[in-house]
Image 1 (spheres, rainbow, N blue to C red):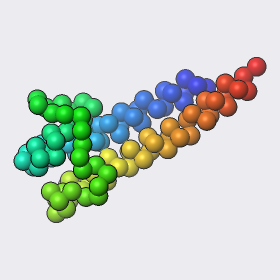
Image 2 (cartoon, rainbow, N blue to C red; image 1 turned 30 degrees about the vertical axis):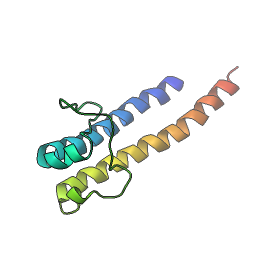
Image 3 (cartoon, helix red, strand yellow; image 1 turned 90 degrees about the vertical axis):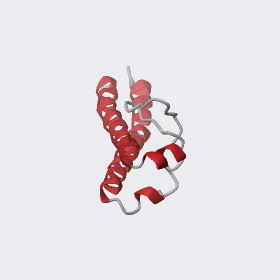
Length: 105
């Protein structure tokens, strides 16, 4: 049972990471100067040369460069959705694992 719970987490985490990578790659490709001003963010798998692990704008609402770009907004909504799914899965996963360990014969 625990292996199933942990095994389900991997694709959820992977999809969330890829969704965030898509946003960062879109900014890198279409808004390079804003990418530099935002601290040269990198994703889990998208790692351009000279990038850093820090994302300045992520929890501060919609960035200015993204406000009028429908594709960027769509990518951001998708990334936020998968990050929420990952967070709530983890919130549910750990108590379940503890319950399984405690009730094992």
